[in-house]
Structure formats: structure tokens, C-alpha cells
Length: 316
Ligand code: UDP
Ligand code: MG
Image 1 (spheres, rainbow, N blue to C red):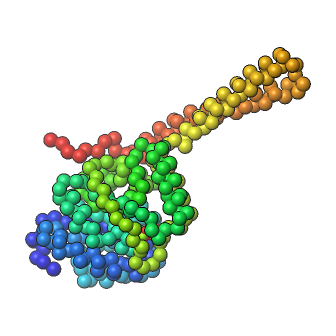
Image 2 (spheres, rainbow, N blue to C red; image 1 turned 60 degrees about the vertical axis):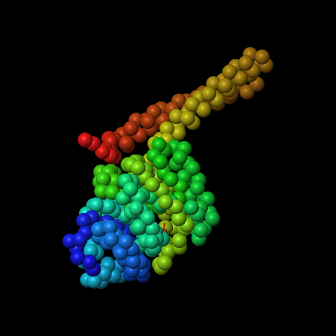
Image 3 (spheres, rainbow, N blue to C red; image 1 turned 135 degrees about the horizontal axis):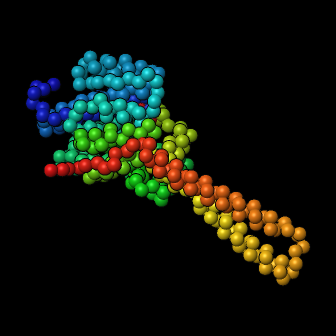
């Protein structure tokens, strides 16, 4: 290793790991290959591995790495808290001027690090990556993923980009911004969009993981997408207002129809249509009231998250 004093900046490489004993050594070996480029620029690496309650030898593997390399750091969770929590812990632990978030399975190619850094150098605060295809993924999963992003575009004001990976490099101020969002139910794809900043997107083709298997079942992804919808949209809470209005309008239309018909032809059903109108009308009014509750609840929901009111990019 070069003389440490030569380095003026640090890049924190944050790696959430859940049962990744096989991938970590491969990941480390590949990533360290990029070191030369960064050393020439006066940037030193810092590895932050976050063990998300792994049940295999992940922690031991990381400890072995630490014996060889002092720049390796570990945060080990008491149980599996999920990737979102691991990301947050990694951001808290990182001390670098820049940080990059990477998966342990080499699906985020370390070979892209120099290019990502070049954009940071040229003044971008945030460099994101997008997969341009979903090769190697079951078609049904891709289909649902597309629908999800389409829906999110419609119901959320936050920019959530289709195919965007968590593989992102950022300056310290973006990292601080993300840390300032302390909500418990975290949906990083939304949080990254919410904080804003000048983002540069790089595209690459999907790569399959080197070892181990994906931690995401279809069901887990489905629940995660619901999480995303609830964290970044309050539209579902307002849905009952829409239904309620539709019901009321239908009930009124029906009422007019029944009155006109009764006046013209008498009432062969002895009041039954009127009862149906009354039930629909009352049902609609109830739905509207629930919707009003939903609107207040959605405001309360946004308040309890205590998100920052604004984030500053620059100031004099
Ligand atoms: N991961 C984690 N906690 C979890 C699930 C996953 O820290 O509960 C980590 C995992 O070790 C990997 C990254 O998150 O480094 C991405 O997971 P995976 O490769 O399984 O997801 P995919 O690439 O299939 O979306
Ligand atoms: Mg993966």
C-alpha cells in the first residue's frame, strides 16, 4: 500500500451483506483492482461492510479481510433488519468525502467506479446507475416491476426511476441529506429521488450475481413495492373519496330515474328501488367521510416522518 499521507480524500465503499460468505472475497478482490486509479487521484478507499444478521460465515470472512487490510470496517447487526437498515448503518459509519453503495454479489461492477468518480470530480453530487435490461430475471417479475414504476410515476411526486440500482456514488452532502431522513420505514429508491441534487445517470447491462442467490423472493419484492407506495404516496388514502363520489352520483342518477319512472308508470316494486337509492347514497356519503379522514391521516403521516423541510445544496 502507498504511503497514507499522500491521500487527501477518502471514498467509503458501503456494502450491505446478508449471507454473502462466498461473494465477499470475490467482491474485495475485484474492487481492489480499481485502487490504482483512485490512488493516482489522491483518493483512499474505506470499506464499510454491514453484516445484516447473516447466518453463515460472513462476519468471519470480513474479519479475515480486516487482518490483511486495516481499511476494512464492519457493522454487524444482531439480526436481519433488511437491506434498507444496512444502507443507513453504512452511511452512518462512513467517514469518507464520498461514498458509494455496492452490493456484495458483484452485480454492481467495480469497473464502473472510475467513471462514476470522474462525474463527481466534474461537479455532480450524485451519480446513479440504471440497468438498461433485465436479463436473467423471470419475465413475470420484470412485468410487475414495470407496472410498479408506472404506477409510482402516476401517484407519487418523488422521482423513482425504472431500472435504477442502489449502486450510487455521492458526495458527503448527499450522504448527510440521506441521513437526515430518519423515517423508520425506509424505501431507498424513493429517498434517493426525494433528496434531489444534481444526478448523473450511467447505464449498464444487467449482470448476474457471482455466488450465492438472490435474497428477494417474488413475495418479498411485492411487499417491498407496497412499502414504496405507502412511503412515497398518500393517494391510496384518498381513493375512498373518489369511490364515495362515484357512489353518490350513481345513487342520485338512480333516484331521478326511479322518480320519473314511478310518475310515469306507477311503482310495481313497492318502494324497493327507493331503498336501493338510499343505501347507495348513504354508502357513498360514508366513503366520502372515510376519504376526508384519509386526507387528514395522510397529512399526519407526512408530519410524523419528520422529513427535513428543505435540503441545501449551496449557500454563501
Ligand atoms: N442484503 C442485505 N439484507 C437483506 C437482503 C439483502 O443486506 O435482507 C444485501 C445482499 O447481501 C446484497 C444486496 O443486499 O449485497 C442485494 O441483495 P440481492 O443481491 O439478494 O438482491 P438483488 O440483486 O437480487 O436485487
Ligand atoms: Mg444482487
